[in-house]
Length: 121
Image (cartoon, rainbow, N blue to C red):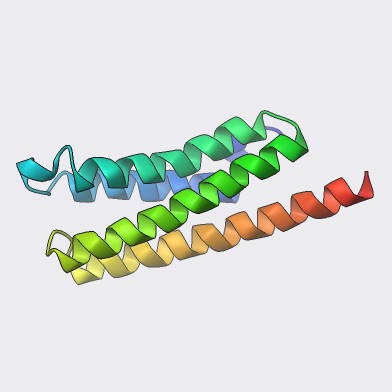
């Protein structure tokens, strides 16, 4: 696939990752190894799976995209929990959730593109 940094989905996930790290830095100390760590792992999983998959064959990349899509869903669930527990202001949740939703759509599009390419081979 090429350089993962050229993927719009990777750039979006990386940007959201920076935002999640900054937001969770304000969480209470008792959440450092709890929800804050889970949120961080979920978003890092998205960009990491895209990076790893981009360096592999198309069929393998498609599998890594599916893993990344699962991590986006996990992240969105955890963002809701953080909001509902009062750890994340509604405005931050809304912006993050919208970004995560957009990343999910990008991943679906990338997966469809790979499927079409694989079908032609």
